[in-house]
Image (tube, rainbow, N blue to C red):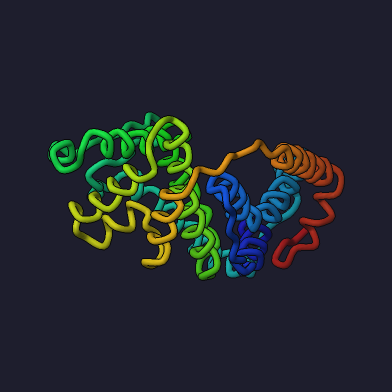
Length: 272
């Protein structure tokens, strides 16, 4: 798996992070979420083929690994161990939270610092709460954790980090729009965001508030909040893409069942 999937991940992780914008933050978020995972798709297909080979292979395999195979796999093993370690640290680490935030991977919830209610008016507080409630509905802490893992598997390419940053920013735009559709006023949410930055007072807290990117990203977010909310019509293409992906993975498994033995024997470092 390391010998086959590792180089594929490394190759496709170098794909450029194309700049993209959309009048709808929710459409932009969905598109950038897909772009996070597209570089991993070829490796997933290769893994599916190996899975098909493993299913038909007897318990005592008649292929053996030479030392060169371990040497080829070692660099990719280091990348994957790093990614897993960072993911484990994200699960265990206690981080500084913004004054109001969504926490929890399996059971997300909104946490509010005691002083927040006194720092902003009731309308701004309710707008901020609606934004965080949207994060809860979509289980965004878990999705952010998975996105970070996907980016770490594509290390050391900077384009992977850029894809992650762009999606994180679009995620905040999407939740802003959803909060406004649930009754929050854009101006009130803008006040809550700016107040949260002032109360937090640290660069890390600013980034955690979305403020992913430079000051221009914050300016655009505030400008969107002060503009009319954009209607988000459902897009059927994503269901077609999901069906095509599942079909391709199924075909890869079947190919591994029938032709995997020939492919595995042709790998460098595999001795029949």
